[in-house]
Image 1 (tube, helix red, strand yellow):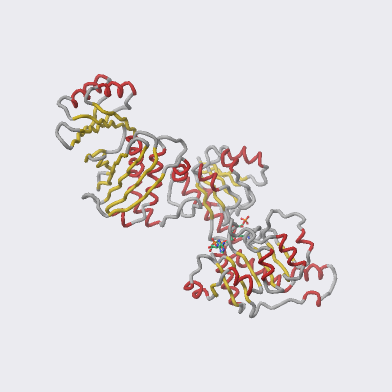
Image 2: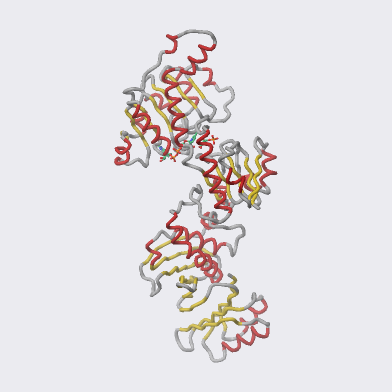
Length: 526
Ligand SMILES: NC(=O)C1=CN([C@@H]2O[C@H](COP(=O)(O)OP(=O)(O)OC[C@H]3O[C@@H](n4cnc5c(N)ncnc54)[C@H](O)[C@@H]3O)[C@@H](O)[C@H]2O)C=CC1
Ligand SMILES: O=C(O)C(=O)COP(=O)(O)O
């Protein structure tokens, strides 16, 4: 039974799938104190939040069984992603479900700002009739500057065009072709700042976007510009905005989000030109149903080991690629484990080479699985989410390459490990109908099923060597299931690759290494 902890208010219809799932127990507890959250998270397999719950490194650490954190919405700035990644916890969001609601809210804010609707409402219900105090401006023929033309920015642009506005957009990923298709002018951030009558931001809050709209930007804006922020507090420097309104440079601002939420008694609220909502962009019945439903499905898929798509801390893999790579997963994991166990010394570098039909697809997800297989021999709590992170943290360089030459195999994965003592190469393939096989160890061709307890013996090719190894194994009650021998030259260096029926004890390895013709013996458990 999976325990799913929900700590922010979510749509009941949206989480219906979770509530009805036979293998799930849903615990809904909103408004928890940080201490209560630490207690509740201890037993949860999944945590489901909106923007209120602060999922700190401490919370993540306390989540002993935590496998996935779901965000019913877009922004994940309330979740410590690096902490989740290092613990191998998948973070998923629901990026599509609240786009329209937030774009519509942005428009509602822009029109309210242009026509002083909140100010007019307040005055009217106080019994006043001050029509000349609330004269506004039209949107018609005005220039709207959009910073961030992603999902929401694009929907805002479309609506602005219906209002006959000229739209200038800045987004580092905006191509001329896409700009033309949407019907906006592709501009620089400077164009947006200097040419717009209204400026709206739709980016995440990042190092680059923090205080993107600052005192210097306000200086260069057209007098009478109006500012809208329905993205994240902090993209606009609130202190600089206050100054710019006071100086008369900015005619007004509409804010749905704040540097600190809730903002309390903010100085900006003393200015009549400022209108505000309490982070309502995504707060519609439709959006809440959509995002809760999307993230619930993702959580169920992750807990049940089924394919999922919106992981924030994993590269997204198209469904058709996931299907193609699926058969290689066992090979990749076993190969990683095998390669690391036959490599002596401290690991410096892993080079993974994909050949044959694997060159026709993006094998990056397999690299993660190989790393997981390799690192799980040293580290606990490792999975394909944190494997690359932990490899990097330990100074292991990982290189991935594709070569067309596949030595007669339809597919081949070669893992070369470089330690402070040696370079070792192992290669594996997926044999049609027979499953994964190790087909090469250094210079030697083999055909080994990477499964169970294996023994790699490096020795000198002498008469009787094989018999003596067999005798010692027998005397330790270890049964040999399969055995292969590889050599290049008669009497030269050779290897034996054995599959045995039970784990090989240290004392047995020592007895084997005492044999004169034996160089090294390595036990491999897969
Ligand atoms: N007020 C609310 O309730 C809601 C707020 N949001 C927020 O709105 C923002 C946008 O959401 P979406 O459109 O869904 O995200 P998105 O990921 O589709 O779009 C973000 C865009 O910002 C662009 N961008 C990133 N850095 C930039 C930079 N330095 N300069 C210019 N552009 C940059 C990206 O290229 C991307 O196109 C997010 O911060 C999200 O958290 C989203 C939903 C509801
Ligand atoms: O989706 C987002 O990024 C939002 O900001 C929506 O936040 P909320 O889920 O309404 O707390």
